[in-house]
Each structure stands twice: as C-alpha cells, then as structure tokens.
Length: 88
Image (tube, rainbow, N blue to C red; front, side):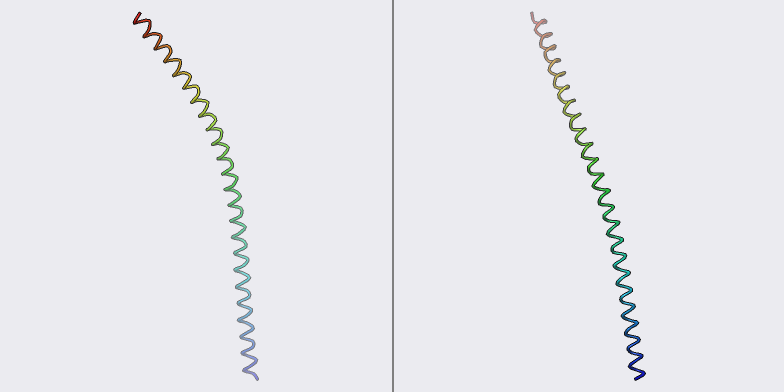
C-alpha cells in the first residue's frame, strides 16, 4: 500500500504543478492581452489624429489649388491683353 500512496502523492504533485503552470500561462496571456488592448487604443487614437491632419491638409490643398488656378487665369488674361496691344 505504501507504493500506491507514493504513486498517488507523485500524481497529485504532478497535477498541482500542471495547474500552477496553466494558471501562470493564463495570467501571462491575460497580461499580454491587456497590453495589446492598450496598444490598439493608442493606435486608434493616433489614426484618428492622422485622419484629422489629412482632412486639414486636403482642405488647404484645395484652397491653394483654387488660388493658383485663379492666379494662372489672371496671368493669361494679362499676357493675352499684352499680346493684343503689341499687335495693334
């Protein structure tokens, strides 16, 4: 009966060791998930900020483009008028 008791104690110790390993792994995985969740939130906020910057730059680009088109149009009018005056 002593051998059976020793085998039972070893089996219990092995099971306890496996339980501890599983709990440790689960705790580590939960910690990694919370770290990953925090990183995801940080990336989401950075993406939102970048989108806002992009929208501002797109608006500025449209404004500059419209002004350049106007300036080019005015220069063409001046040059055409100058050519007409030279020919007359």
